[in-house]
Length: 527
Image (tube, one colour):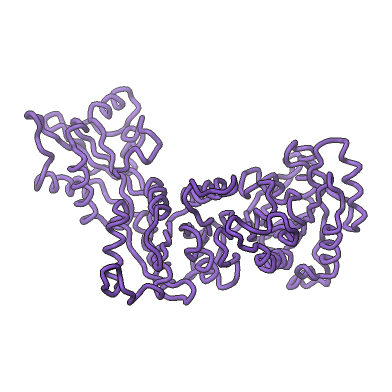
């Protein structure tokens, strides 16, 4: 069988997201006392460890869902601009039902400190009667219902155990007790969960061929694009700004390749943040950028480029990720008059973007309408191509010959008779392509010349549309590591000072070239 799926359901604020984080042993879902934080289905593959480390590791797909009936009550029903969040209830319940219908095990979370509420009883009844998603295990070949186990959350200590066992009255076998805060009964809970799920015969799913993070400001169409790619309503789409909170991974097949699209929360200016949840959402968006292969930066063609768009562009640039600038809602902008009364064309809009987002001058631009399906396939083809570009490695000899020809054509300006020299060039990494130049003195290479050199490299190398990280290393520092026995880089020629330019990547000591460099990518980024 494929990887078993476990769905977590329950009313709002019973600790479903905390339970997912506890099982995953990582902060994946946003946890906040505010009801209704989770709205979409949030899934993650988790490896369950066997009790006493005896037995195979069991991979499971764990899914967190929104609180059932979260906006039925008046509290928190309206957002800061007066929009009625109750309109999201139907969509949230659809996502819960989808998670229940696809699950091999359902964890019904109930707050032991609050006891069984009328809403808990209603959810239990709906699970029994299959009114909250089907439990008939379709496709299993067995006439069985998907099992439901009650999880008594917030069981913070011994005094709450008796209250927890009262949950057995719902008729779903003996309740499992656990506290995500104090970790009380954590080991017992995880051991029992391990026994409840079957072992996947196919093993864990292979890593995706491409991970794409979709980022942008509020209501730019990120969730609409996700659903168009997935071919189903995988995430909630609403006119209400800020509907998406978590970073939601959606898996789908594209031209025979496995793709994970990460839907992120729509952002706005930090000074407009209403609560802590928006800061969590910003953090999840940054994590999505950090772990993806390619970023799709969505812009709204019907609105001017904003400060939020510029901030997101800075986040992407400092991550060194390939990026496609996607102009969504192009159908609303094409042909309209610009501020000077001229019709908007793809060429004129590209000029506008290049002027506003100068740091992404290398990034390709795609005009698209996610709602109408316009140009979505071409955009995904572009993302695939950028991932291949970022994976490309250029040979040491080819790179040295290229750098030598650039320097011969135009070298750095001599200052006070000091000549700037490059002894050796090597691409030491991919994702992003990272080029190290061993020079006599990095200070003799001005920012203007580095910019010129980068532009020439872009013109000649097979990764002209992705970020290139250029690092200058002083020759004496590399020599020092070699003399200390820490480097395997061949000694430079006694007369010219140049290194062997025909070394293979395996012969180059990457550590010698990258030693003592700061990890912060922004240290090498030229605004």
